[in-house]
Image (cartoon, rainbow, N blue to C red; front, side, top):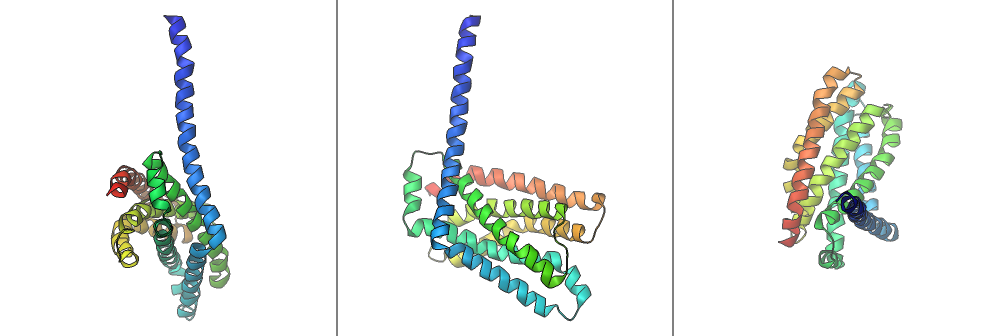
Length: 243
């Protein structure tokens, strides 16, 4: 009996490892496909970057006369920029798949739909982080504000994750409609408000140099919302793409 158990155990573990490796391989393949397509076309990143740069520059001129207001508005300007630039990316991310017929091919492939969801989330997150990596130094120079604070970088990552986790699901939901460009922001912003508010408050607290007891409630709220929204999107993605 012991020999049987001993002989069966490695096979079970090998099967589990193989399944996990296969799942991760699908996610990696989808991310790589999106990155390669974007490197060839540069459609989505160009639109996101141009939009984000214009927003930062316009706010710079609009708030130039009031230095104090400009410092206090840093967190708000950053998250407005990231949210609207991210919406452009989310819209194009799924729309390109549909227009080129790739979405039908992905749905017909014998892969777990949740792997497709996480692959799209990861690629959207990478695009959004790339835009933020360009905006951070530019904003620091134009507004004379040091944004390279470790806590602020963590908040930006958590906020971006929550944003793309919900946005990818809603983009998949609206991609079949003719008014997807208008419908996605209308559906997205009310839903991601619980992510954007704690992200904005935590960012502002880090920039103001507040102590951790004042920051932790917003940070905890952001983490909880990220977990809940990711779980809900994970469970609903299969049903939405089927419909």
